[in-house]
Length: 271
Image (cartoon, rainbow, N blue to C red; front, top):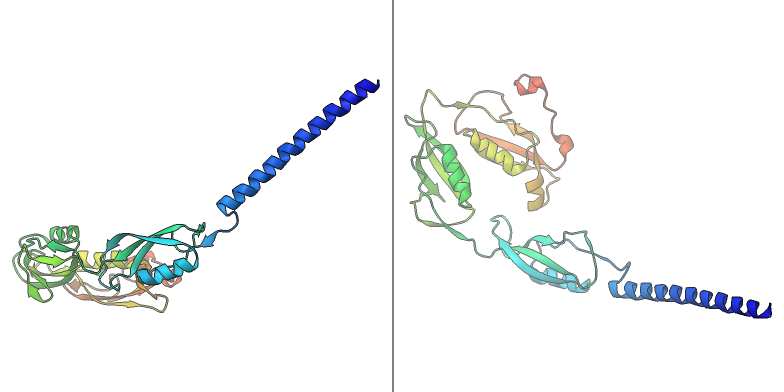
């Protein structure tokens, strides 16, 4: 009986020792993993947009992060060399030592070759302009047999010849034909449309942008791109307009300001 108790106690002791050893190993491994991966020591990525690379480097060094400039774009209204986009985004949680990838606004604009738009329809000319990284500027109408037929092309107030090298993002003004029997259009319904989409819709309706007016909710370039239309002058469908008429757009990031479009509004009766 004594021998059996002795063996039982030895086996029990060995099992308990094994369990304790396993638990100790698991605990040790967890501690090591926490130390290696800096568990619960994540850092919030700061917003670097509109900073210079030098400013961003200082901000990241203070947070024990690094940066790499991996790409560039050219945005005319943004300061040259400033940070346009970052990855990971601001507010993301990362570990110490993480590398933040930056896209900056190029110091010099890319040059593109001006296409020949003469003889194109307005729609064809627009597609060609955008495909070259250029922008639609003012639409000037003169009497002609064919409405919306491109007669001349301009940049910076001067007629520009095909093959001329211009900076990407340059606004191209068009002189277009206007037949007196086909010269009427209407303001498009752009309530709730984002900035660039609204401008495109105005041009698609053979109208010009007079003013883009942002309210107090728009603070920077990123806000402007996300802003939506909450007002127009002349208003949507208010009256027939001569092609080339100027439209003013009012934009906000506060979507509660955008009027609800009703059936009567869409018919131009609820102003």
